Each structure stands twice: as structure tokens, then as C-alpha cells.
Amino acid sequence: MTRSIDLGLPDAERRRAASLATRWNDLLYAPGPGFADPLEPGIYRASFVITPVDGPAVRVTSLVVPAFGGELCRIRLEPLVVPRPETLGSFFDPARRGVVHALSGDRTSGSARPPEPGWSYDGPSLRPRLERVSRPRLVRERVAGGAGDGAFSWTVDRGLVLTGADGVDCLFLAVPDVSEHAVFAPAPGLYRALLDPTAPATPGAGSRDLLGYGDDTTLGVNVQIEPL
Image: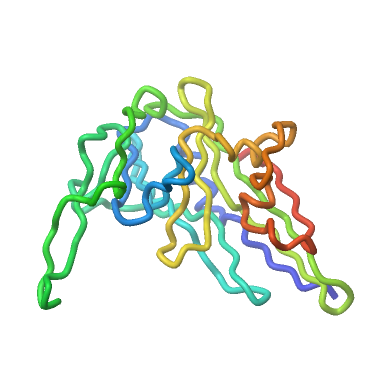
């Protein structure tokens, strides 16, 4: 019998994802090390907070669970009250970089300080593109492996796709990060392979690679975009 895991979004999170097709006040992030990837410009890794014009803020992270000798992850969307929004950076107002907290040299106290270079967003404002988004869709991965009594499979809602006011898609993708961070791609770039199966292939950046399974050719990997 095939062992199988379903990590689809619960109904409450599906409704939360669908509700993001609206006007946004801001897209915030927690600054810190690893935020900007020097090898993949325009790709960011953090916990993110979407603040719609109407409705509660939504925190976007990764839910990571152990399975089949490794780790699976799905996108996670939680309601959030932002107690101190000034500590977060903003994609809509790039001058707002947030703060990070660090221990003193003797590790007896902590203090807030500006982020180090590369720990915050330094691109153009995304407000014109993301102040209104539409067409929420899920990136659903289906993976199968093993054979006979060792067969296994999983289905995971791995990412959330939204279309900006300019018609360009942006992507939030779950990753197996110890801090439960997610990846944010304001424009698909290499991640186009996840969203469009007809996109030209880029060596080392196919859908298997982007999902983290490029080194395991024994797995059968299928990616579909599902409307909400």
C-alpha cells in the first residue's frame, strides 16, 4: 500500500488566500540575514506580512513537517495583529527597513539596530504593482516515489500566486527553512518554470530544481496551478 500525505491548505487558509485578491496597504517583511540572495537577484526569503486595505493582516510563512525521512513544507497563511509594525521593513516604502534585535557582547541584554546590508529591501517601491492584486492561485506539487511496500506519495499546496496591477505574477513559495521563512519572487524570473509549463527550460532551474528535488531523479514530480 502506498503511504500518502496530503498537505493541502485547510479551508480557513484557503479563504484567507482568496481574500488577498484586493487592495493592499503594504507588504511587510522581517529583515535579517539571508533576506536577499546574492545568487538570485530579486528573490527574498523572510516571513512576510500582507496588510489589506480591508481585513486583518496575513502572515505568510512555511509550515514544515518531517515525512519519509526528510521534510515537506506548504505555504502557511495566518491572521496577525502587528503589534509593532515599525520593526518590519516595507516593499511599498523601501526607505523603511525595519530593525533587528541583537544581544549585547556579554549576552545579558538586547537592543534594536538597523539591518546589515543585504538584510532589507533596496529596490524600487512595489506599491504601483501590488497595491491591487487579483487571480489568487495555488502551486500544488504532487510527488511519488518508491515501489512496492516502500511506495509513498504526497500532495502539497506549496505556493501562492497573485497577479499584480501590471498583469505580472508574483509568487510566495514555501521552503524547508528552520525559521519557517518563505520565498517571495515579485516577478517570476526563474520561477516561471513553476507557473508556466511551456516556459523555456533553464538548466538547473526546472520545476524539480526549484522545489528542491533536482538531485533525486527517482521521484516523480508534477506541478499544477490550482485556482482558489
